[in-house]
Amino acid sequence: MSTAYRLLSVSLLFVALAFVSLAPDTASAQDRRVRIINAGNVTVNSFYASNTRRQSWEEDILGNSVLAPGQSVMVNINDGSGACMFDFRAVLANGRKVESYGMNVCQISSWTIR
Image (cartoon, rainbow, N blue to C red; front, side, top):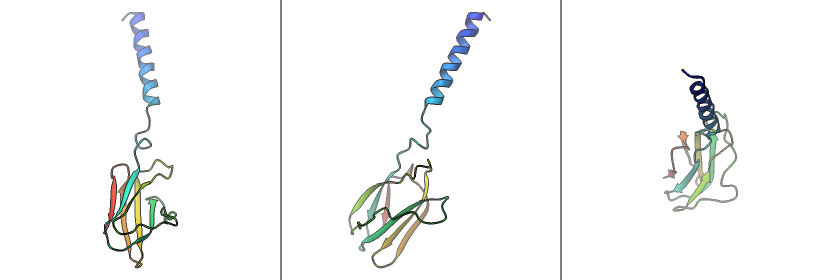
């Protein structure tokens, strides 16, 4: 193998490694926007999405807003950790809680409350 060929091979290897290191992390580049749909007949007063590694619910994403029957809202469920797995909780005006666990926000585009 000639010296020129070896140098070219090594150079190409370094170029390939540089491109791989510049590529975005798949999980962090994922779209984490999820449309929350109220398909029920009771207003949603609160909506929580917490990283599955957390032991408690994060803050209410709706804040001072509510989600009336038939309405939907797009939320960006990104806590900055790069995680894709979240637990969801909706609290309805009648006190009922609707919960789903282990939701992959990098793969789903909507979550419906009935």
